[in-house]
Image (cartoon, rainbow, N blue to C red; front, side, top):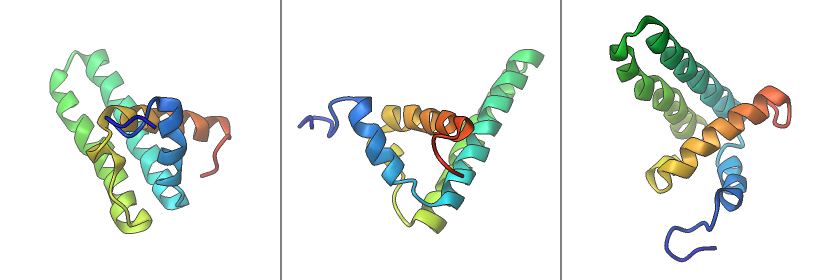
Length: 103
């Protein structure tokens, strides 16, 4: 483990991220939030409406934080590891879609 950031790589961080997302309801909420983020970004670019991008953090973090505060009962990793957490969210989304993780 790196002394400066806590994790030497994303590969080292991801198992920690998954452990912080062990509750299925929380995973489902993250999945919904990430799906909406993808939809909002896609629609914003398709319609050339950048104002829609303002909703992206609200829907993305909104669903995820409900999962953490009400189902996981932990603090989102975003507060200490924002880039790795964003990467982890999309990696978990991929793993849920491919069946590597269960809903």
